[in-house]
Image 1 (cartoon, rainbow, N blue to C red):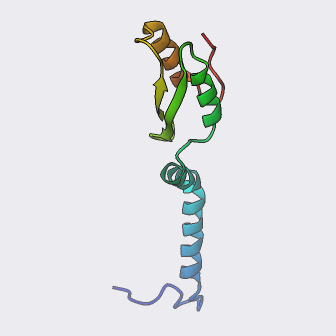
Image 2 (image 1 turned 120 degrees about the vertical axis):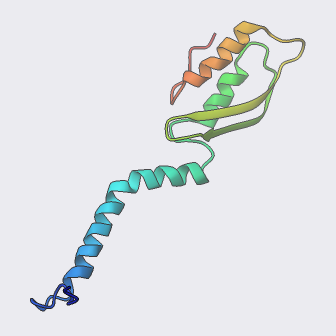
Image 3 (image 1 turned 45 degrees about the vertical axis):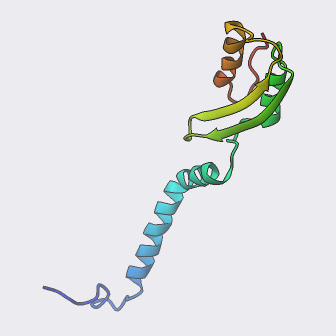
Length: 116
């Protein structure tokens, strides 16, 4: 069994740390997007490409909505977004057409859906 350092024959004892640093740099460079997206999901409530003010304006523009409270938008993963909101609608339930129009927001990523 050979227990000599790798640079023993050549005298290049610095080669192992250098190769380790290069390999580490390649790993960090290759996984940077994953790390960045993970940190964004951890620290930022609203995912990139979604403007909460545009979402609020769209929901406020739905027929019968008088006010919006507690609008929360967050990333569930790098490809899925979740939203909760309390919509104040005076009177009774507005019907299925309203729910369909509100659900159209789930198809929206970065652009407003068609206003019903």
